[in-house]
Amino acid sequence: MSPRPDADGGVPVDAAVGEREAQGTARLSDIAAQAKVSEATVSRVLNGKSGVAAGTRQRVLAALDVLGYERPVRLRRRSAGLVGLVIPELTNPIFPAFAQVIEASLSGYGYTPVLGTQMPGGATEDELVEQLVERGVNGVIFLSGLHADLTADPARYARLAGRGVPFVLVNGYNDRIEAPFVSPDDHAAAVMAVRHLRQLGHERIGLAVGPDRFVPARRKAAGFAEALGTDAVGARPFVQHTLFTVEGGHAAAGALLDEGCTGIVCGSDLMALGAVRAVRGRGLRVPEDVSVVGYDDSELNAFTDPPLTTVRQPVRAMAAAAVNALLEELGGTPVQRTEFVFQPELVVRGSTAQASAGG
Image 1 (spheres, rainbow, N blue to C red):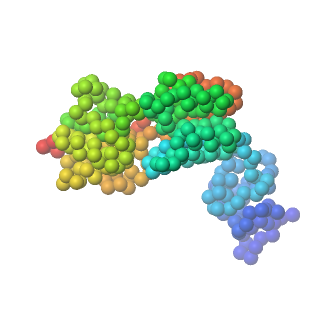
Image 2: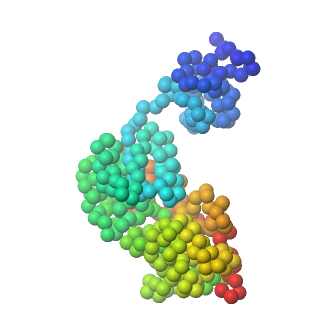
């Protein structure tokens, strides 16, 4: 029996799918337009019929979500299990970006992501892990956790493995931990940033980066020294170890400006924004007087003043690799205990320019 059209000729989803549990007046045509499929395909998906490709079915479900309508109960998948995601904070845009991609990927495989976020004065990484294990998570993905801190005790990860919980570590390789690692090439990131500034004619270039105890900071410093053609000792006057924050970037940039730097490479985009503020605080301009390069990249960088030149982390590729490695572990196939390294990309915008004649 054909569904009954309403007064304006559209076919309400409720009529098309019979006993649909969702409330509202979504129409097949609305969902079809959003998913870029036919109304017949939408009807088949909503009625749980076969003969629809998995990718097409996913587009229809995504269209329902985007339009703000509940999925019919028959289409709500039973979770394959819980997977914990532990991140250090939400204030730095790179961490929510990773979390969003990782969570979407896990959900696509039927797993329910459980986010654990560290906050100043809040739960520690160890406490978050304990809470996740108590909830019965099947595995854990750590992003920029204590594994990246060379002063932290790596035994906590051995204990987690001993409890039968597989895990993957993102950002910060540590050879004292037996696990799959997923990292960007921080060394190469610093090299390409310095070369970019050198090509623009900058001769005195500085690095504003996080504390030396963190693996990514140490690797960036090594790449920076290599690009300058010196060693760590020779590069030391032009390297400022501080916090990966706006305030840290501001403080580091001030010291580098005192060294006469006209180009500043930063260990994060937040630090780069702090560096821009420090430059302007000296009555100088970015990029006319001083060029600034960030690291990470987010959608907001194109809208900063000036738009921020940065080295982009390959978030999607790294997130996919981390999820795939964990799924292999959950499936009983041990993944090689090594580091999978992904190449970053220089994104040139408006915060870098040719060095002035005086520089």
